[in-house]
Amino acid sequence: MCKILLVLSSPRGEASHSTRVARELVGSLTANDPGADVMVRDLAAEPLPHLDGGLLAALGTEAAARTPQQAEAVAQSDGLVAELFAADTIVIASAMINFAPTSTLKTWFDHLLRAGVTFRYDESGPRGLVKGKKAYLVVAQGGVYSQGPAKPFDFQVPYLRHVLGFMGITDVEVIAIEGIAFGPEMAEKAVQAALERVSSMPALVAA
Ligand SMILES: Cc1cc2nc3c(=O)[nH]c(=O)nc-3n(C[C@H](O)[C@H](O)[C@H](O)COP(=O)(O)O)c2cc1C
Image 1 (cartoon, rainbow, N blue to C red):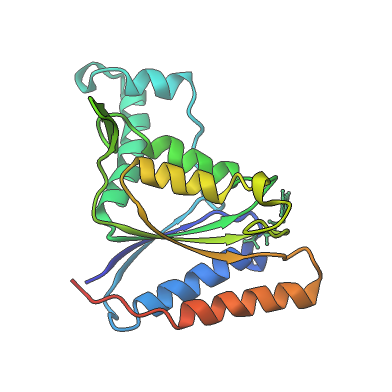
Image 2: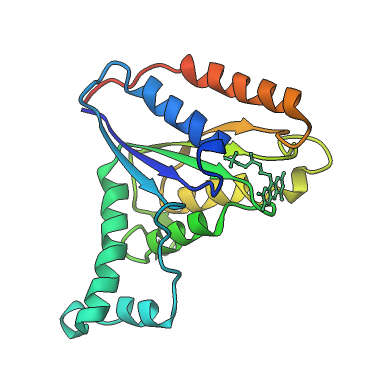
């Protein structure tokens, strides 16, 4: 049975192109596995708490010494980490907002990047501890960032690749839906191209 974690983050609800294409992608990946386990983490519908002083203090306190509130705060982060480890495939739908991923998606990563849990440092530098996973990034952007003058201002895909890689997830495929702001014709073309690409992706083989 395939285990997929689908992470949604666009604030644009049903109008979101990244959400639509990511859902289609999950459909293609699970085509041969009707019993696939698909966990959906909708960060726009259920935003996570930002890292604040209370959560940092809770994370820095030994489990046995935590107050009930601290234990609850850490349990939520632990649950997110467990979801990540449980999946073999991670599909992340990301809308570009002000040149970057949404703050809700950034906050999800803030919960996941935990020293000693998802990464550690040793004598040769940082080492990711989340192994054997494949990630798909479905990104939607008003402009065009894969090439041309705006490329240096893409703080979305390079950031997402970096934090995934930092945790050990280096097998990352990007499906970009670009130029959404360049008129309905260009937007439709970009969405259709992404839908065609994901519909031709081979289904996962159930483990
Ligand atoms: C508040 C806001 C800020 C945005 N900022 C950018 C931006 O900096 N660069 C860009 O290319 N597109 C930007 N866009 C356009 C979105 O990236 C585009 O609408 C994309 O389709 C959003 O993804 P979604 O369709 O999955 O919601 C912005 C859109 C909104 C609503």
